[in-house]
Length: 397
Image 1 (cartoon, helix red, strand yellow):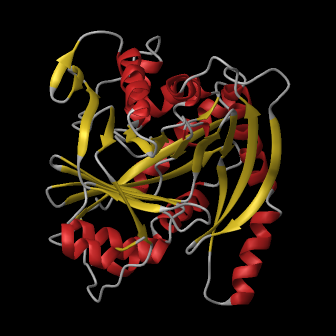
Image 2 (cartoon, one colour):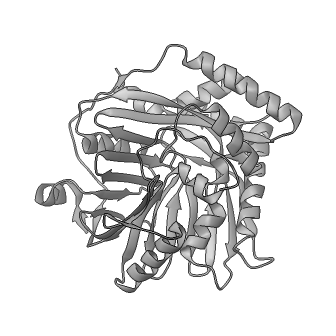
Image 3 (cartoon, helix red, strand yellow):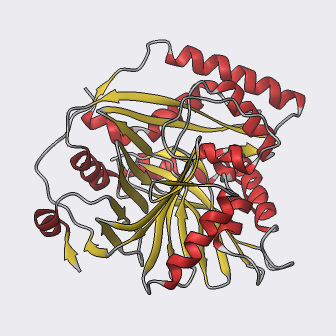
């Protein structure tokens, strides 16, 4: 297994880096791709050439061919949240400015597995350029969501807003530094053309192992403290939170329903419910659902059935997505989408792209948000969004 610092010296910056601090997951670099497929607002493209046809059928053909040509990782890629427009054509989503592909997948030429230790003395800096009336806008939109909740249109809405920064730092150095702070379970770095994606996600969207599928939604967040007594107190508050349990249960039920589209009847189980997991800067409430896939289900069927993830939309999914589309005045792009890989045997491992930053020429976008329910307190929800940006606090000027 390669040392990160050594391989960076030998080969330079990778195009893709999967960075996991979770047990039983190997981190890896990818420098080159044999083939690349992406979908944008103009159509489908394979190796830069436009291809006509159903985009999901074309992607499926690519994946099946790539799987035959390796015994390792057949593809890495990402799904933008805005791919929802192709998956839900019955909803007339607004067209927001978005120059990130709706989805992108590549077939690695070679995968370099690395030890997940990177040494650096460099401390990066980012400069906040957020508007001063950020909270007023947030408060106004949460009141609108509360009206929708009151009328029974929805039960939960995952509302988000972007934090904007500027930096002159080397972007991959910024990624490594923040990874060392956050120690993500599902971290990713992508350098695609003029865009870099820096993802420090703690959340599993889904993973498949042969004919089994697992999903572990996060709903419920509490900040950590360096004081052990306060930290344990915060953890206990989350553990006993009726509100957070209600939110978590709504999304667990939603994902059970989504899994029902692709799993054998009677096979879906809730393996863990309201489990508290402690990360570097936050405690999270996580549940785990599993099922056995039907025999005729392929990788793209799984994506189409589950995407976007229920934990980042709300419930019911379609109703909450409509409200999000009306209230959020920016494009989420990759944020709350999904990033992952597909092995040659068809096993998949995809995250929910939260704690995720997009860089475009030194301008950084790091959205934050959370699930809003009827008894949500606006000030508390606002504080929670700041907790989710805590990994940036030490480097923000």
